[in-house]
Amino acid sequence: MLKNKVAIVTGAGQGLGEAIAKTLAQAGAKVAVNDLNPDRAERVVQAITAAGGEAVAITADIGNKFQCVHLVETTRDAFGSLDILVNNAGIEPVASILKLDEWDWDRCIEVNLKGTFMMSQMVGRVMSWENGGRGGAIVNIASTAGVNAPLENRAAYCAAKAGVVGFARECAREFAQYGIRVNTILPGIFDTESTERLQADEAWLARVQAAIPLGRLGLPEEVAQTTLYLSSDMSSYMTGATITVNGGMR
Ligand SMILES: NC(=O)c1ccc[n+]([C@@H]2O[C@H](COP(=O)([O-])OP(=O)(O)OC[C@H]3O[C@@H](n4cnc5c(N)ncnc54)[C@H](O)[C@@H]3O)[C@@H](O)[C@H]2O)c1
Image 1 (cartoon, rainbow, N blue to C red):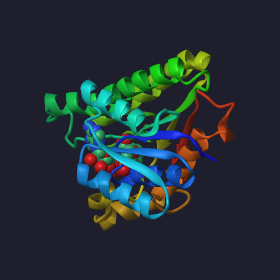
Image 2 (cartoon, protein in one colour; image 1 turned 180 degrees about the vertical axis):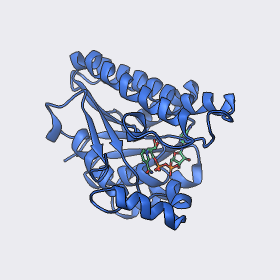
Image 3 (cartoon, rainbow, N blue to C red; image 1 turned 90 degrees about the vertical axis):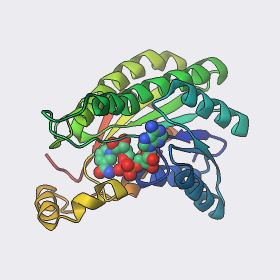
Image 4 (cartoon, rainbow, N blue to C red; image 1 turned 135 degrees about the horizontal axis):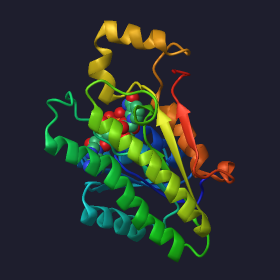
């Protein structure tokens, strides 16, 4: 499905990003596995390669413009083009608004929101000017926390993810003329490393499972499959869409 396509997945060293990178590679894409943590990215690349796929690990901080340039240029050097960008890297400082440190607020906006802008801008330039009219697909991993499900002690995260949703809508409108589709996924609560500590709290887990009509947390592969759909021609008439993947939670 993605044969001869080149994809960048940010924050792909574990969790949802890891599942997304593996799924895109399985579908035939060559994948740049980005993470701030080099060991995590390398581990995912080894798994993809062992399964017969093609991938390269690229360490970069998505909140830093120069490191985003490094990520984009190293991907192009490795694979020669760029067709898919998945803006997945995200962080989630935990503190009440009354105690939230200004630095944590700034860093959260920098990685989740500004990182999405910088990567979309840089990759958008490549896709619009150098892809010979082929365009491309950008998929943003936001969160229901940015839209209709505020998360306790995570105000900066909620604000950043709401910002991603707004940015992505305008990005879709502006990039449509270049054949670049931009869509956004709103995951609910998933069984990943980042929710492990929450899941260890049995009362929390029982309360959350009861509130999810499908009765369980999501699996990373379930966001990865939606990402594959939005990255491929199966969704060729979709742009500016926001898709909720949350087991039906309201
Ligand atoms: N897990 C969930 O339940 C859930 C729900 C809704 C949305 N999301 C969103 O999905 C995305 C992935 O979530 P996850 O649970 O897999 O997260 P995670 O914390 O398990 O993994 C994120 C990865 O991104 C990397 N990373 C962090 N900052 C980075 C930076 N500045 N540059 C590059 N890489 C960086 C981390 O090293 C880590 O490997 C995030 O954007 C998150 O907000 C997750």
